Image: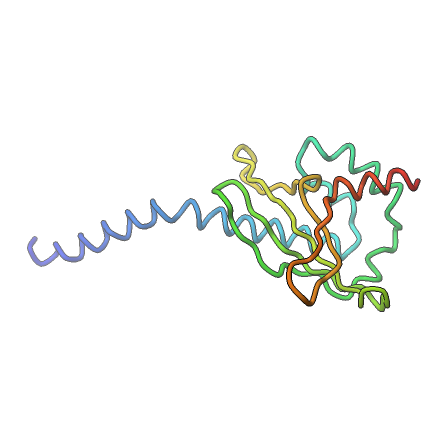
Length: 161
């Protein structure tokens, strides 16, 4: 038994580490899966699939906006859309920076960024995008971008209809 004691201590330590770090690592994997899935569906132009990534209470409002204000061929202008960075502010909230490059847009070189707030849905074991609590900006080469609330931008879009 004395010979197995070091191995048992190592296994107990690994089990404790898995219990402590496991749930956070699992949520991180789920976040990456959900965020990459959203970006892939946006790039494909599948707006109905995009709605599935939004928080439940925002889906109806944004479904109507997406169907009336987003051109069906918008995705053909996307050259690149990727997750640039992300940071957990608490176990159930992630702020993700997403960078978008559109084909030739002379006003801003076609580069934009989104500061997207994601919340963890404990019951569904998935991350949901809080689009109305997120921000967007023209890409800034010097310092912090001038973020504008997407809820405010959506209000402008509704007014322009």
